[in-house]
Image 1 (spheres, rainbow, N blue to C red):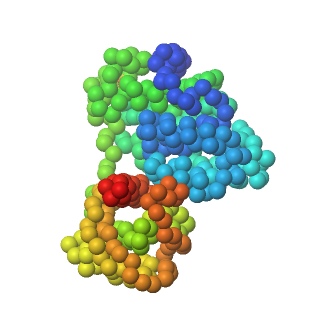
Image 2: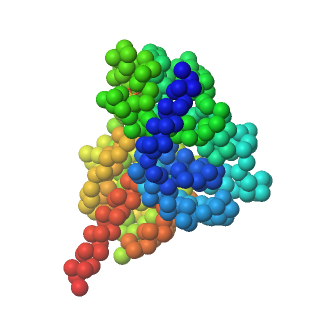
Image 3: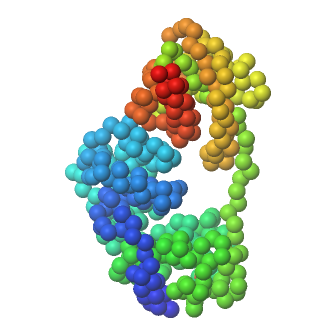
Length: 363
Ligand code: SF4
């Protein structure tokens, strides 16, 4: 049965694999970049980022030589910036201590920042055919259904079971293709809802299908109850310039990215009254509250964040902060030079467009 499963899956993959920019290469650097980007992000969203990143940093040496800010700017919009910082730090380690080589050595890979079991196996199996299994959301679902596993394969004993199952299914050759095929099957056919079993190369052996339990296996992931958070972001104007501040490297969220000052507030009802004190605490500047600009909602892990953006006018003072590490006054046209978090970029691009339109209206 194992040999038949391997054969059928590889034949199916040869016929149905999507043409993706990282698929025609066995260069571990290119595979690594793609796998880091694909964590937490969809394939369609990754493609333009991947192409831009590889055009700018075509080798591990080029990435190692780059400034962190340039790496973050290219990552802007992909989210989970820690991935980019780890990738950059790992590239520097590889160049400084291993001559820029990316060898077939799991111990070395696992010692790099940001490289866990999945990334290590994905890179080494695709680049070198090393027999390492990979388990991520797609392959986990397919394997649980194939074997009719009724527990939760995302945790505890279920995790151990699914890694063992993935290892046991590996062929001795074309390991990288097999791993990719398994993920592709989960992505295109064995989808979370309404899997297309009639098109599946494993339908004959699939236990969940025999039981009619495809929709119940695996059980849905338990989701934590979202926590609502109110935040105030203040666009401080000084003439035609806005204040941007840089977050510290140790910040939990968006380390080293730039933003207009923002902080959590207990309630958004009296944002105008709170604004001068929030700004004073963050920057030591005196400002006069202006108008509400917009409210943006976004989720970070279990937090549902409502970002209330206000304008303010600079009155007096010199920037000083126990949180931010730097500050600059920039024109809207200069924003592109600074890596910003996604919500702040949405906010500032909107305001920059308004500022340009106002200017055009004046002329
Ligand atoms: S037969 Fe259906 S449930 Fe089973 S692996 Fe294939 S698509 Fe998934």
